[in-house]
Length: 128
Image (cartoon, rainbow, N blue to C red):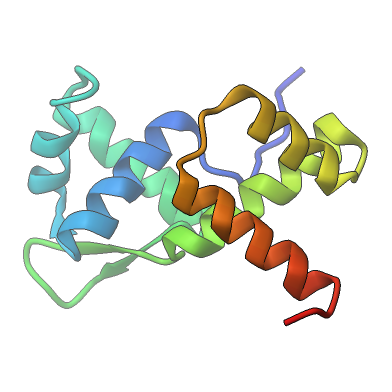
């Protein structure tokens, strides 16, 4: 049985989105060349991935340009929010704080990051 398609980007799709977020609108050849730094793939596979991403609404394509130009249809922030929300629902049963606590326990946070967490907590508690 075929797996249902997801609107969430796969790891390779995220790599392509990172290229577009960093470099801006790009032709398929540029995306393919940049992708080669992290994943060996053929040009036709890159074009196929862009087609799938177009169907998922992750990229947009300028049909007027020749060669066609692709751009990210979702911002880094929007994609991150969708992935985090999905993770919170699937792994932490909707308990966002469990994810936050897990992340803080397992990753070294800089003093600046900890200060930002404190500021956000104060804001949530209405002290700011």
